[in-house]
Image (cartoon, one colour):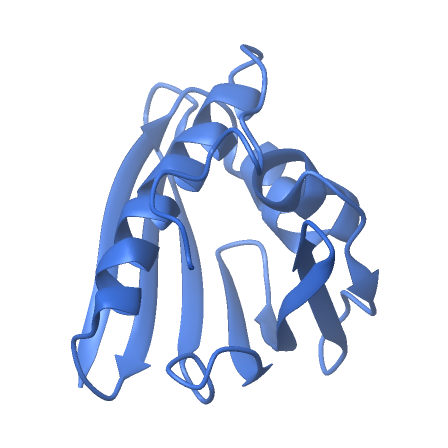
Length: 147
């Protein structure tokens, strides 16, 4: 199985970065650019939309100060049963090292390549917004189109 991996240094506290990833309101700021539906608590499901379509639904499998884990339960067939993990590590300077892992891809496809590119762009949106320089959520963050 394949994974998409990214590592970022963010000049914001782990608590601030974690809140942006853990809440529906935070996710819409850095990723979707529109409301996220569902329940963002452990065991809940969140549905992210882009434009006029629901792109994916995730079960919130773990939510702690140091880690958030989502399991894809609906969306593109290549995403079903993949896991997205965000790990927040405090830095000595007060910032955060964010490690991102989208794991469980059955094979490397064009969709995976495009998602890797877009994940990098949206994680940069998270970084920029957490640091107070503004977010670049969809559609401005989309680099590789799904169609």
